[in-house]
Each structure stands twice: as C-alpha cells, then as structure tokens.
Image 1 (cartoon, rainbow, N blue to C red):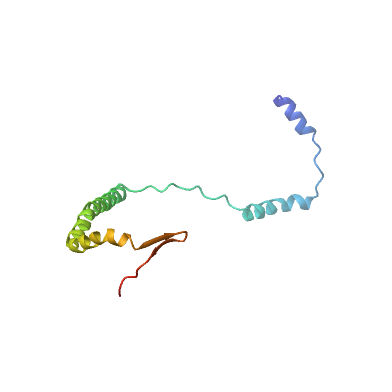
Image 2 (image 1 turned 90 degrees about the vertical axis):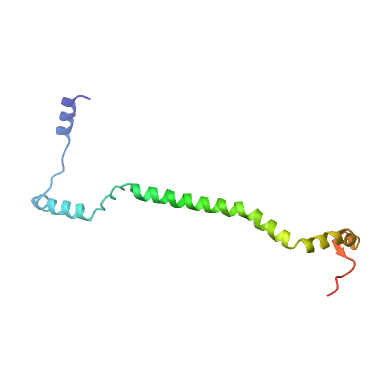
Length: 119
C-alpha cells in the first residue's frame, strides 16, 4: 500500500464525536494511566567479577585440591601403619579363619554360627 492510499484511508475513517469535557479531561486521564501502569523491569546488568576476586578464588580452589590430594596420598600409609601395629592380632585372626569356617551353617535363611563365641 502506498503512502497516498494510506493517508486517504486514514482521512476517510469516521471519528466519533466527543464533547468538550472529554477533550479537556483527556490529558489528565492519560497521565493517570501512565503513572499507574507498571514500569518495565530494569534491564539486568551482568555481574562482573574483579580480577582480584577471580585470582583469589582460583588460589583457594588450588589450595583445596592440593590439600585433598595430599590427604588422599597419606591415607594408604596411615592404613598400612595401623595394619602393621595390629599385625599380631591380624595373624591370629587369619590363622583361626580356616578353623572358624567349619562352624558356619548355611541354609535357606543364610549363614549361621553353630558355636557362639565365649563372652
């Protein structure tokens, strides 16, 4: 549609007749509606971290990872130390294992002790 056709259609549209009071109160009504209309939410500004914050966070994470790795590397040593300290008890328990194996009874309800340990 060309501009000339559009202008002629707009001019040919019949406008309802309004009294003088309508035109006098129109600006006030428009202002009231504009003020009560909900304001659009403010655009969110992305939060930018400072270089100091990023570097500090990386340092803290590196320290945590290093601490965890050191802790994990010492765990097998700690377990082996405990086993070596209790080596005598472990040898006795392992020596009794074949003899204790015969006192277990297996049935449809699972494994049961035939002989109870003395208190």
